[in-house]
Length: 171
Image (cartoon, rainbow, N blue to C red; front, side, top):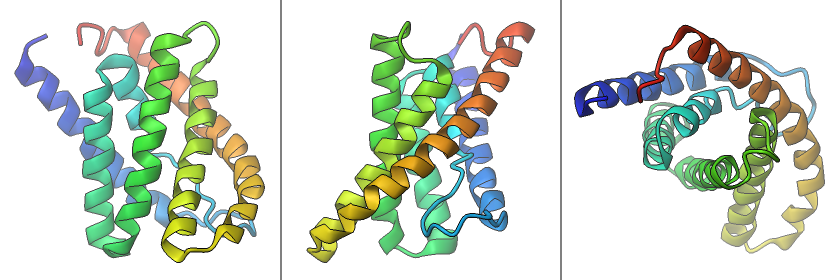
């Protein structure tokens, strides 16, 4: 695939990740646990990991985090979004490349969701100088397994359809 087509696909993934992030913010989750969200934009990061490369996945995370932060959440949230997103993308890429027979797409998504929450809580604990925040991690880990499974299921379906139809195969 030529570089122009690859860049076009990356731009499409970034734009979709931004749009999905905003749409997800409109969906109220019927869960009384603060900080829990589905993480649907991570579907696009997963697509980049499967069809492109780590650099592309990281670009999606960074550009999505910057856009969403500046347009809705404020600068302070950027630290949390980038920490969780970058850790998640790197871990999912390593698991996908090094342990493909061990981790399914759902497994990657669950692992990514857990490390995303862990990274964000570690940053919060460090910034606030309050280690007690980390006691909230088991609650977030349970939520991450559920949301990661849901997001991973959608990712599996999308990846399966793209492969079946031959889209992105030459990437």
